[in-house]
Length: 173
Image 1: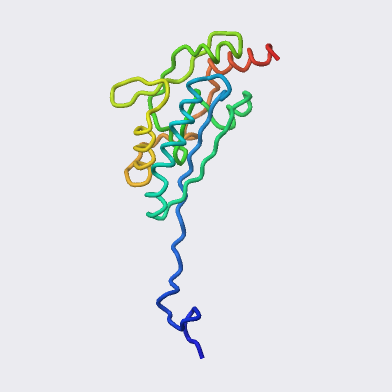
Image 2: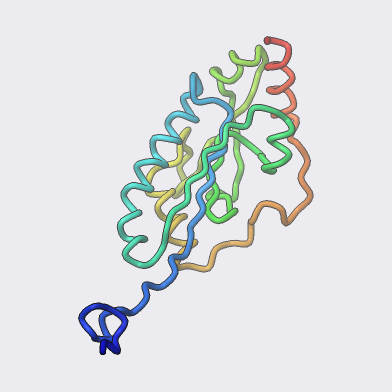
């Protein structure tokens, strides 16, 4: 009679695989059709995740990617959306400093002046977060001691800039 856990009779070959730990990445944005910042951020995020996913998989992690088009004030409130675009890893924004500059494409969409996010990495501002910034944020969440900037820890108030954007979108429909 077979006393092992598999057909070979050995109990050594059937060790259960450990449960994979999830890394949740949220990409929140206003527009992917014309906004170059959102488009570039999505491209860099996709490439960064592709580059880091094999290492994380080998280490027992599974990436869960959520891409959320913030199309209304209600969605902005639900996701505690501060600025477009935003990347969060396990609920933590990858850039603690939210800076914005004028975004012509989003301004054209809503018919008003609107600012979108710029990213600061190693002392330089970028319109899209560099892949290295995204990869470092993911790895820091996995292996480091991340800063306590999980969305939801402070009271959320919809930023005026987003109110202007959504108001303009409603008027232009």
